Image (tube, rainbow, N blue to C red):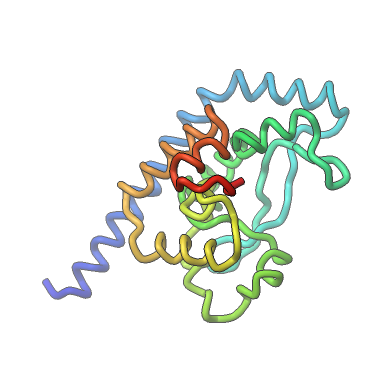
Length: 198
């Protein structure tokens, strides 16, 4: 078996296992988060008198647009009281498991960006096309690092694209879960040993 065939076979196996894992993990996560999710939804509704969920167009695999779903955390561009807590822990992203089940996202992958984000970063150039060769993720290496300068984000996205495997996916999920519990800032400071990380 030649190298190209081996590489194609490995990619196929990884993609199949990754999709199966995405589906199973999303069902489990939505089941486990059902009760706390309802509590959060009621709190948002009673506190803000606004729709609980927030939908926004993002660019997915092969640059196809889709609508991401999250808990509403902002009003008129400002984080709400509940929103600050949800954003600090990443809990606002729990509803994205629905996007994963529908096949628009994966649990681990590059951040799902808006068209405005892509233009602002200058990533509409063909040089960055590889970034859209995979599904965007709820979490990923760039998301764990904290969305710093675009060069850092591109570095982490590139690292994931060239070395993605189930071990890296599992590590990203575990670290994201720790962020849900202890907060993004604390985990990032421990992980990267840099005090300025947000």
